[in-house]
Length: 223
Ligand SMILES: [Zn+2]
Image (cartoon, rainbow, N blue to C red; front, side, top):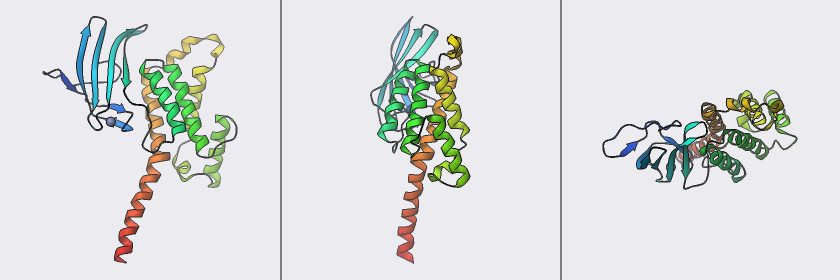
């Protein structure tokens, strides 16, 4: 299989994928099973199931204008979103994932940038364009303001997502060959960065709050 999906060879036609795939329902990379459905010289069709939540996807290996490529079409919404990602951010992540799943990588990068801007807006950075929002966040790192997670983030991650997103939609002097930089490997890195942000902003604080509440409840019993 192309496109980052690696499977071990199986005798019975079912293949457990080695490093899994991102499941939009679980909001995490999961072990998945894939099964051959159809193969001919120009295309392969696979059926994929998340081992955790049993969500299904159709995986198509096809010949794109730039060679062999893979499209993953999930039966559920979500893209990269996690359990506590707000719907306003989920919308752009879903758009990014759909563009990504058919190899429209410039479009996907533009939507990942939009998701990050929406995340900052939702977290209280509501003035100006993305650059202004990041500058405001950096000021909070200096003066101790803003949400707690701000102080655990290297703002360069936001700047680079902004620059990639801008580069994906700006005219670049009419030179579209520069868009080739937005390749499959880059998308894997962009996804990992967005995943890290969602974890930092929406999941980690929630887990810490729940852990504290459990500890406190037990402490109250014994003290
Ligand atoms: Zn799942």
